[in-house]
Image (cartoon, rainbow, N blue to C red):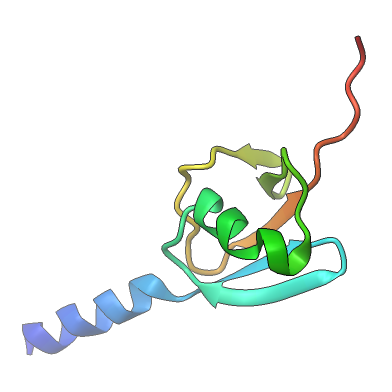
Length: 82
């Protein structure tokens, strides 16, 4: 019985992550890093250099693994002063 619990929890740990960039949005398998997603969607969604990932108001590092149930927004780099 413990085997079925283990396999069930491992399949639940993947899940899906909702991603958005401008007008584009998609649900993808969880477990990828923010950089993986940027690399995968750069051409398809015409992502610009310096695109950053945010979960709510928190900016994510490129190595952050996207988790089940998260909603991630990718935004282009805004202008900087100076």
